[in-house]
Amino acid sequence: MMEKIGSYEEAVAYINRIPKFTGKSSMEDTIRFLGCLGDPAQNCKMIHVAGTNGKGSVCAYLCSVFKEAGIFAGMFVSPHLVTMRERLVAGGEAATEEEFLEIFCIVYERLSALPPELAEKTYHPSFFEFLFFMAMVFFERKGVEYVVLETGLGGRLDATNAVKQKEICVITSIGYDHMEYLGDTLVAIAAEKAGIMRPGVPVVYPVRQEEVAQKLEECAANVGAEAIPVPEQAIKEIKIQNKTIDFSLHLNYYDYIGFTVSTPAVYQMENAAVAIWTLMRLGDQRITIPVMQEGVRKMVWEGRMEEILPAVYLDGAHNIDGILAFLETVRSHPCRGRRKLLYSTVKDKQYQETVEAVVRSALFDEIGVVALADERALPLTALEDSYRQYTGFICKAYKDLDTAFVELVQDKDDEDMVYIVGSLYLAGEIKALLRRPRHD
Image 1 (tube, rainbow, N blue to C red):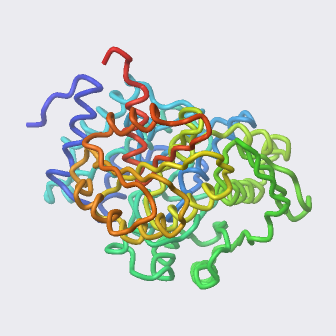
Image 2: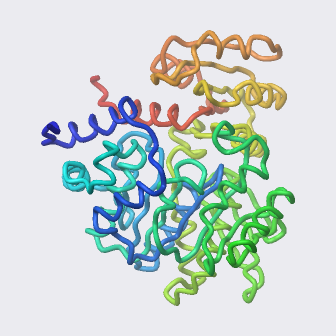
């Protein structure tokens, strides 16, 4: 007998328990269960986004422009930073607790009436699959026109690849991550991400590594998809300000057009460019150049080089490519005082390569480490050892995040800059800490 779920908190608790009793399902079973739900949101215009870094930012740029154009769009992204509701967004607003519980119950109750081919397997969606099903039900009920769908892991076998029709596909920057599942070369990882491609559906991707671009072009040709590469030289006339970056972007028929991203993160120019080229290919008449300019300018994505306090930046970079992009941005920040870094990560990331890149950058006068409050966290001793093997900076180990954050902020002089990086889980814990009532 299935347990009774009657509150938002109980629904979240149930979803969080899923990894303890089930694993990933086959694509066939994911498609079957989506059918059991009535194939919700399948009439929406789907924009499917895969890649290693920048997926969430590209999704956010797309949806910001849709909102500016007066287009009602839905967005499914992961992971969340503070609340699970952040994964389910319609019209720029996360699902309310009431909406979350309502759509949870629709998916949950359907599990008690499975067709024979699923019942005989004692089928149950994984953590990510359950939330994907909820998102599709949510978008159907909200009546969104476009759905911006971010993959969770990979592409070919990702639950989100169960959608039937796609308007356009996007593959963002490819880097080394989840290699135990996706392959140990960039070309192999790109091939897995390319699994989202469909015959006759355009696919937009940045040209950064030549071998990756060639593999994506080859995959597109094999399935009969139109390949739309965004060349590096499409971006020029870059002017980095204190809190924004101005740049010009080539848009084919319009030559170079000026855009502004409201962040000092240099990597967001590429993500914005990919989103803009995607919107141009959609050809929706409501999405004009001024609408795109304003939508891109207004986009703010939490936990991505976000200034959470004056001269205190939070970035969710969690793999070597993300860290290198983070360091490029730090390098562009003029600093007349000290640069301090707080770092943490999970066990399954390439943390030794990350640590080496951070140290070799010679950007930081002081580096602090703290363990995450997560079962996947890299232990504090391992974090400390990974940095203490190097010299040239002060290394501090903190017993908990509260202590680390308070000390870093209180000891910060006016001209100092503080950076917090290493994991989106760390970004989430920091955001939760900032939202905590002062008396707590």
